Length: 425
Ligand code: BJ8
Picture 1 (cartoon, helix red, strand yellow):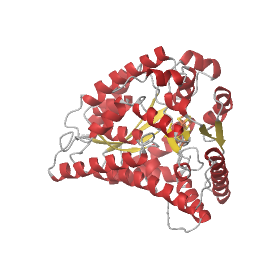
Picture 2 (tube, helix red, strand yellow):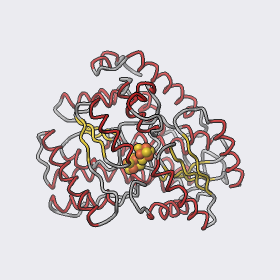
Picture 3 (cartoon, rainbow, N blue to C red):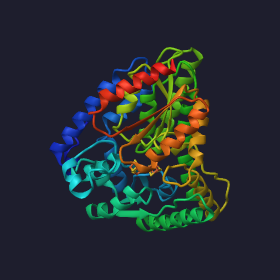
Picture 4 (tube, protein in one colour):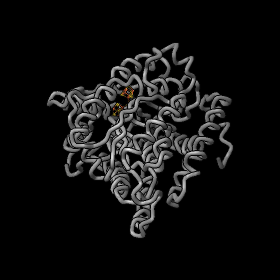
């Protein structure tokens, strides 16, 4: 890190010893997995820098924004509309939930058989190691799966500023009305928090910034269809992870710059792996920073990941908000429509998701699909079975994995992944 941020972390109430330990593990893991890759695009230098400053410069930027009167809003889920936060000059950050921390303390509050993502949310708070969580003026939880829904009841006792958004469970007209009503309630809360009245012009500006960010990552997704793949799955995942906490305009520019580079690579037939390398589409649960275990195993087993059907991937970025309406209510309708199309497994039934996996498989020219489910995640683990059946019926090879954030099963996973990759050759 370029500066000493210890006084900033102390001011945020972090446990410095535990935080140092976390940064050490993160730094080592990043060095081993990312910096050792061959033929990386030069543009990844920006993301290496972002990661090296993940708890430093970006947190300082958030605190500077707060000092200038802006509010920071943290979110755990895709259903929190960044457009509304941006419309009120707020800053939205995705709160990452990709590592185990303070597990003993967590298990005093949650059952052991809770998914790793929810446990991580608690672990980062109880262990006092997340400067993002501690910088937030408001944290948004959402009633998505049963685990999160119930966990927020306990989480609200750990943080002062938790706002819970209700969520529909069915893609019905009533479901869409519920989401719209929740987005209006959220808009009002954001207005009260920030003291900014959101009008159509402000909301349109927020929509433009968020859409541009999504368009940039959609460009990366399209370029990954090339063979040889111009960027590794690990690096593309990293871009999708940084999507959630970097400054949105700077992020968009950096991703577009890397896309220009990838286009040149494709024209010269340059790639990260040789042409003809088996191509895998990952599908399933989100992989938040620093959850790189399975992608590292897949790419270390002789395959390249060419797409992520995940919230940290295309599920979160493939749809834009239509910004053609002139008034606030038209724009709110468009925002609702965009988010209601997200095919998270918390919806029942949810046939769009399997169809989308098939579409993605064709678009990114994948040879097979690995369905990644977190242990105890009922929605995704249950949905994995019909997804597999549907894909198998179209002769698409599928492997279902169930894992957590520990490295205990790494050897076993590697053996299974290697066998699957052999099958794709
Ligand atoms: S839009 S996937 S971010 S809810 S892994 S906590 S589902 S038991 S994360 Fe999610 Fe929003 Fe949907 Fe995406 Fe529950 Fe499963 Fe745990 Fe999960």
